[in-house]
Image 1: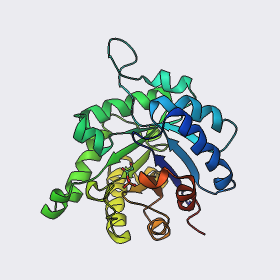
Image 2 (image 1 turned 180 degrees about the vertical axis):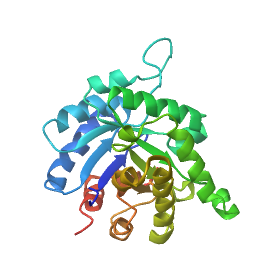
Image 3 (image 1 turned 30 degrees about the vertical axis):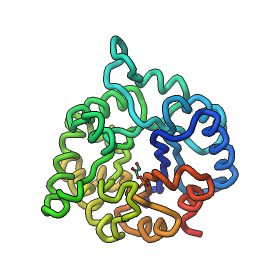
Length: 251
Ligand code: 13P
């Protein structure tokens, strides 16, 4: 069975709610009729306006993080229920910037995934190696371990709907894209670990995105790889035209 591609924009800490409304309004006509799933992951403060502007369109809204606890004394944090109440469907979990700057670990990623799944949000789970790790030749081992810990306690049924994003840290925001072969190689490793843990049927349906300096010029080649099922786009998702070109990578 062919997997439907999924292209998600990770806006990171960009766009006020007013700017978000403008950007999604421009995006709606540009991606109309696209045969891929399209998601925009806005900052928390723009989720409400983005969800309102996108209601009734095929473009889904995602958050960039959530807290694993249901509610309580966690100053500054956002719960799954708060996201769901705004119409959010997806949530990015374990982005390398959160691991690097906000002390996220494979263990907190695991807790967040379980909470998101229990609540009915679709996790987009990020993994990937640093340049140092790649040069040491430990990319496969590292990614395998990230995946095993991240999904510990997650059932095969829950796994089917999950999206995984392979994002080599050295390719994020640097303009250095992994070659299509390099990206596919690690996506294939990820699919094989999922196969070992959950069986071939689950490995076959799970969608694995590539992220890291993906743009209109390199999207088609990356997406043509057998184990790459879409993209998680940073910089190029901040302009409607650029993002829509990736969504319409087939031309
Ligand atoms: P860039 O597309 O800006 O390299 O960012 C990728 C990314 O981190 C998406 O989550």
